[in-house]
Image 1 (cartoon, helix red, strand yellow):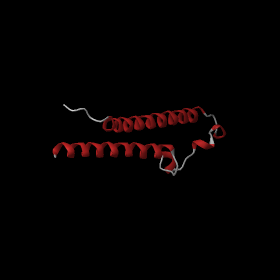
Image 2 (tube, helix red, strand yellow):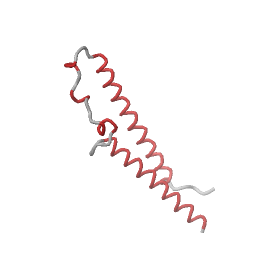
Image 3 (spheres, rainbow, N blue to C red):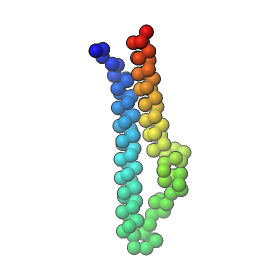
Image 4 (cartoon, rainbow, N blue to C red):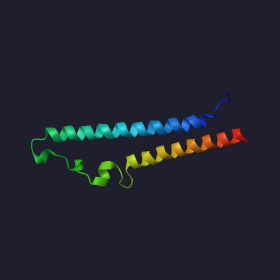
Length: 93
């Protein structure tokens, strides 16, 4: 069995870690917002920053950190697939 280059496994692991990290941070933020809103006694206690457009809510607004992390994760997966494909093509020939 030949040793695989670290880039192949590294890209996939980096992609998985970035997806998990982004999801964890987003869930923690949403939890804080929901708890804060549930404890509010009046409308004046609700923070203005908690109101978001639908695009902001799902992380699709321009420059959103979740969008950047998703692109980074996707790029890692594509790079890992390309490296794997090249390795398979080299072994087949």
